[in-house]
Length: 256
Image 1: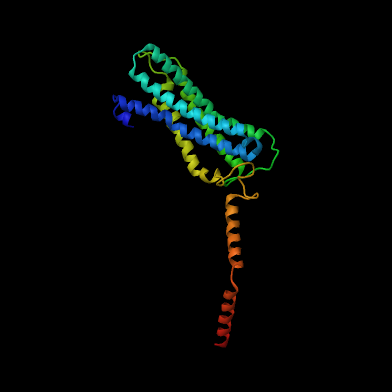
Image 2: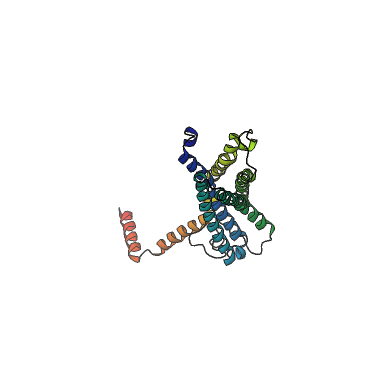
């Protein structure tokens, strides 16, 4: 909005481009974590393996490194006149846009694979709601994010348009706002309405197969059982003096 108000502001243009690129990174990380929890719930032996855990950490590190690289070359390409530097910057930008498409599609692919592979162990339930609802939420959000990332990558790989020619349809304002902001708003509001904070929550200290659930119960069930156990323990801990005092009080009331 600030860049639209001041279109000649170079610093505002740089900040706007950086925020447009970096805004979806948070959604990439969230979907990867959700996909990891689904794999750990459906296939605990695979999801909790050291290789998959290391792969998730490596992917997140690559996301951060790629973000820093793209932001750096974007700023550099604006302030430099070197043709060689511009060529290097464009190559890194193309890598970043292509990498984002792969990362955006990865949770979708992982969820499909976890559905296709037959389960060999009991489902480790976590959060509220059914497992099919969780998978459907992740598939739809990953599909929308992949659509936006794919559009940005396609426009990046397309040849530059001469200034004397009319801009193509994919460079219009409508496409810019639909594939950059509308897609993200739909995903964010769907997460808010569907309460993914409750659906994808896991127990504190969960580590290893079967640690998402509590003796086959959900987090809410575990909390209720703890309350029942604590109340039963309180009843058992009543001292004999309390019982004697209660009997004396009852006998006094009968005499009255």
